[in-house]
Image (tube, rainbow, N blue to C red; front, side, top):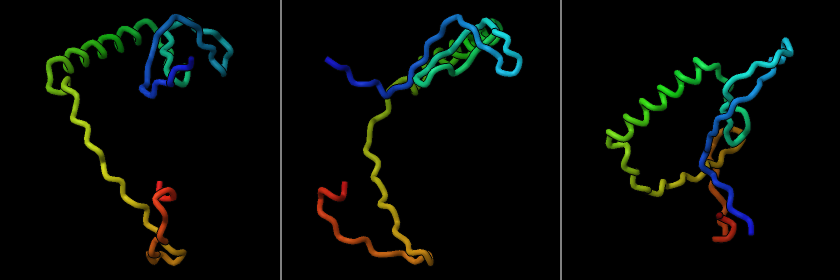
Amino acid sequence: MTSKPNPRPFARAKIGPWTNPQTGNAIIGICILGNRGLAAHLSTGGARALADQLHDLADELETSQAAKPPKVTEVPRARPRLTAADGTEEIPLPTSPAESE
């Protein structure tokens, strides 16, 4: 059984090294990992500052109206404009419903 990939971004933190590509020195710190790998490498001070900021944002979100999920409405998609090389607009050719998706 295979699970569907989660499109929602995620992050996790762990202690780990980062090697400076210029000097080759390994620096131990806090690694922030996301969907695409290493997103940030923080010192202890940087990690504490980010944690404080995240905590403040979480408090703000809990006390604001933003905590309520917005109503989902479908945004109408605009059709792409077809233009000739000289910039004049061209009339789209008729298509079947299967071709228009």
